[in-house]
Length: 224
Length: 370
Image (spheres, rainbow over the protein chains, first blue to last red):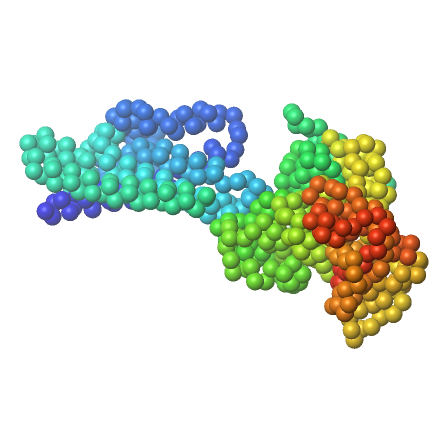
């Protein structure tokens, strides 16, 4: 039982760090794609959608190349802080972040698009800098749609398997999250333990998704 | 030309795929109305002036202040223009209360903005609305809150885009005098967009007529709207009574003043605020005049004038009744139902009744300097 608790806590920790990684870029990219027209916008949009459609293992392979001793990010980590990011829980968080970011970007983009530009214009004529317009008008009006994206991407991140297994492995007590734990126990033939972890997974996924749908329903009701 | 004092100029060129704007006009009075049919570019002009629509070239001077001069590289962002832009939909922030809305621009407006905001809240009679959420306000309430919000931000000029368009007639009659009060008490120059000639005449001394992205006429309200414009597009029958008067007596204890017309006719108006000059113009809106075929007897309304019906003209949803009071022509606007009930016809004797507070100063420039 304590093993289940430990795995669940690790999964939540990985999910939290993944969320911390993806929050600023997710919301920022969502805003950029909804409000700005620039060359290469469509290419960026496509690249950001790729993790949703590529095999997760392929994305994991890409991350592995980046983080390995010969990859740019891995080499930088090793030479700067003498730290090997591969097969750590932080690597699991990175994999989860990359895989779930598209959901946050999409949701934020839609949330920002639903904020009328006229309100931002009005705020500007009242003396607000672009940053103040964003924090006092755009963000508060988009908050429910963004919250939906945050919860949905968090839920998606909790279940990340394919990319995580390549760069974080499945080291019990260190990188073994719920999804990895289920797979490992099924491989070992320990179906009971696998089912237990699956139940926890399902409960968490249900909770996060239910909350996100409730936010969305409320935001739709409010904007009417 | 050297800009000086309260000089105003619009010289704008703006082109999109569907629309070309080439708008040139100059005027001296602080307030002007921009009049024209929908699609004539009125709102676009306001958006360019406010700085929320970029890409126009030319020059904008309002109240002696250069706001845009693309040839000299003057094109400040909207937040640095100090212009109160009130679009037709009011654009209140829906996630805030009315109070939070009106206080939104205080950060720029500062102490002076806060002071003027208090005055605007009073003039526009929105004090009671402040605790409500912006989404709970009606059309007319939204407009007034949006105007107060602009005043609080320290706006030095107000751009009002069809502020009465979303209101029905009785509500207009109630809200419109509040705008006049605001304009006069805060001395805020306005550029007022409307397609309603009556509204235009009552709000501004100067009228610019827009048609297909151009300014086709510019001049004093009574000259421009009385006749057909060069565009030939508008013929206006304004139920607007504008008279040159002379101040005869002031009864400050009663709060009234007695005015005399050249024809000898006397009118009573509220004495606050009164101009410094002895001769000035006043306006009485056609809807403010009550008609009666019998003498009403003692009444709270201070003006009861006896006249004769000279014309009955049926318009869309209302009737204009022309009446002559000892040679002075008046126009009253009534409903068709009232016309039938009173059986008004040319030549009939009629009493014109209106309150002292319905006699308004026609020109902002007449107000005493404080």
